[in-house]
Amino acid sequence: MSNSKYLDSLSEEKKNLLRERLFKQQEGKCFICCKDIDSELHDTDIDHIIPLVNNGKDSEINFALTHSHCNRSKLDADLNVARVLAKLEDIKKNTPKNKQATLNDVLKAFDGGKYDFKYKIEDNKIKYTFNEFGTDVYEAPIYTDHLSGEHTAFIEVPIEYIFHDELINPRGINNSISLLVKEFYKKNPQLHLSLARIDNNKIKIFDGQHKAVAQILLGTRKMTLRLFINPDVERLIETNTNAGSKLKQIAFDKSIIRQLHNTLLNEKIEEYQKGHNMSADDYSFSEQDLVEFFKGERGNVKQYIINSQKDNITRGSKLTDYIDFEGKGKEKPISYSAFEKTLLSLFINSKTILNTPMNYKDDENPRVLESEQLKKLCDILAENIYIGKFDVSVGIYRIEQQIINKKDKDITDEHLIAYRVSKEELLVNWLKIIANIIRSYFLNTGVDYDDNNLFQQKIPDQLWKNIENFVKNFISLPVWKDRNLASTIFSGKSNYDYWATIFKTGNTSEGTPVLSKPLNFQEMLK
Image 1: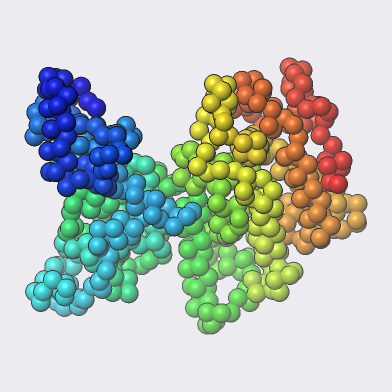
Image 2: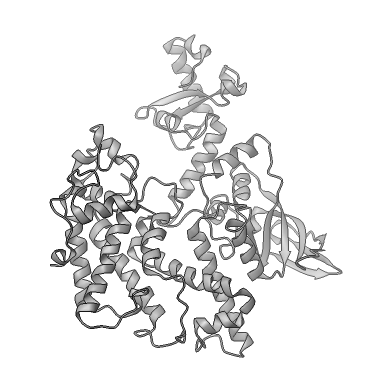
């Protein structure tokens, strides 16, 4: 409940009468979450709708009734904004597991994204209608961009005709959306229009989805868009990708760059097939052939190949459920950055471009073997460390501090183990041991192998058993569940060498004992 001289001046009886009036005015619903208030069961607060610091009045016309829980956890002091952000949180919660909410999810919640767009091009104009809203025909001039040759028009579109372009911009809604909502609410518009294209008779926003989301949440039913007509999709993807990487205009995280490069690789493959009069299902060419064909873009194509492989592995295993793709979450144990710097960097060589035909039989195709076997490794990690053991609802936020403060009753030993071994500085070191297990096996069995691409040769069943036995024995080491180490060994982030020294000697570089003895991976394969 906010600080209010008006409320403080009321007797308890008058406060209860005010509570009843607000309950009736709000039709028995919480002002923030818009869900029912049970006056007998729910604790409630009376709070200012517009905060006093924002010149809100300290009077009954500026009060609202809320669940106490909603008021304590509200995402903004202004209850109007808090209500909007609470609606967005509901949309996010109803999004399928392991998928970030997008503009499409917001549109669906507001009865948008439903209809096809009917249009025609005449006399350098686009003529169109919105059939569900009448028979009026509108028109807008088409402009040509003199550098790219792209054709665009500026039109106002009802949200019922707007969709999210998941091909060009697969990003979900990130945490910055709350700032945009607040700016739009203060009538400070972001002047850059959202960009859209026509695809299969649908208007799809590929740039500015956060601006669109903020406006829709605040009640907008129509938006002015810059509409691209018959655009070069590959150019738009590359432009959008570069804006988030080379040019740093928007915050594209690495996982999204990988996903976009996967799309760009498919575009290059299709272009190669057309250039060689090949059918769409003919993959009798190699990665090297593809690189040579696009000589002027050789570096880019190589990057598309490697990043496509990384994206395929990242999103194709049971471990995916435990990777935080946004990078700022407090629920999942492995940040995408850590996954990228450890498993992907250790086991996928960014310099390897294959001469093997893409359609070479799967059980001997190096790229297919690499993909399927790395996904199998990820499955082994997920099954032994995370599934049924790490509780996403408990999460990772300040776990060591909770232990120090004796507030760790919800943190099981298995959860703590999963959290600790997922730290980047630890992950990189014990994954290196798995690499050494593979090398050792190949050496001892006389198998010729490529040390730079360990997973591009077939890993036999016995080696898989060795890897899984190591993982099981590694996570059973007492150190990972020792809560007495929360304020010392696990008190902060350490560098890679810190744990490399512990694994090699059993002690820290200062001589503090951590393990009963140095790690011997040969002993951990049984």
